[in-house]
Amino acid sequence: MMRNFKILFSLFLAVFLLTGCQKTEPKETKDTLNLVATTTMLADLSGIIGGEHVTVKGLMGPGIDPHLYQASAGDVTLMQNADVVVYNGLHLEGKMGEIFESLTGRGSTVICIEDGLKEEDLLSWENDTSIHDPHIWFDVSLWKAAAKTVADKLSAADSAHAKDYTNNLEEYLAELDTLDTYIKDKVNEIPKEQRVLITAHDAFHYFGRAYGFEVKGLQGISTDAEAGTADVSSLADFIAGHRIKAVFVESSVPPKTIKALQAAVKARGFDVSIGGELYSDSLGGKNSGAETYLLTVKANVDTIVKALK
Image 1: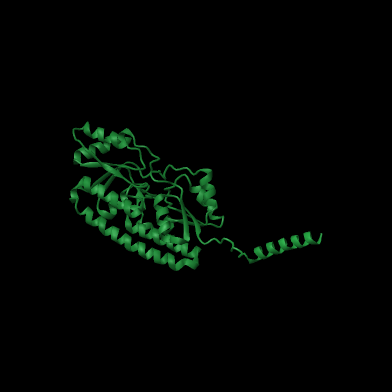
Image 2 (image 1 turned 45 degrees about the vertical axis):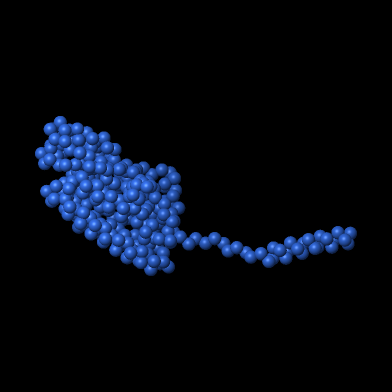
């Protein structure tokens, strides 16, 4: 009996010493903000400004049209559980307005890019001043304003890392200045009378204003409104009459309308080429060479200049 007791005591002592000498692992702490961005452009921007302090998830992948995007139940849950939600506004995410309104009262930081833009810098749709063109990222100066908005809001939400957000912003603004110079230099390769940009929908008016192009889209500022026969006919007359060299398809819009336009121009006795595919409402996908905002804008400019000069 005594021998069994000594054995059990020895075993107990060994286990006690072994577990007592082990280090207690610290509990996992949350050191990054969970950020959800609607579009690929905003996911890219948020990751650059947030750096190591954010974990970014994008709702829409490459080639997705934000005008028509409908959030799934999983998307809503993702945004509800996020620390930060970033969206464009200006009705770009037209079918998600109520969701953003509901998030504001849940304690999350909701960043709307529209809020950081000046009214006078926005383009109105035709004569309706209450509706603004949402495609602000094609004017680099407005994208700089978007970057500042994200940096300011992240700094307010996470003041401990405000200096890092500011430093990331300054570095990115310098890259955007370089991009702006690149665009202007490339555009100068096109004679002024040939700077007419015709695309599937009206996504490039900010680009046209900033860099000196006349811009026409077959559809309106939202792809929710389809082009009719009269739209195709009118634009075909313009192209044939002005002998426009090329028109462009878009990565997030089916090419059938531009092909119909091309056929209508041919019926008028003039051949217009399809100058290439432009990235309009999303960045390029993996291995496209246009995975970031900077690369996407460069790719667009290179495609436009090559086709029109």
